[in-house]
Image 1 (tube, rainbow, N blue to C red):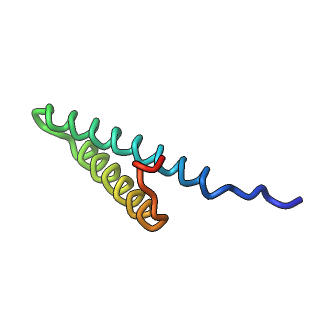
Image 2: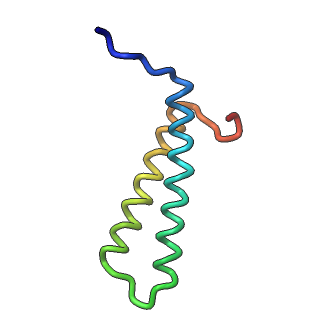
Length: 71
């Protein structure tokens, strides 16, 4: 039985949702670190990972010619 093909529009919509979620996660971690007296190495690591994921998703959206304004 053949695998179900995903529609490009569905994948694009999911990518945009993930971008917005990742930006919120990144900003949340940044806010916690900004309010911390002594940010832990793990917190700094989490911040860098969240930022890298967000930027990767933005590059993918640009590659797919997506715009949040068109959705």
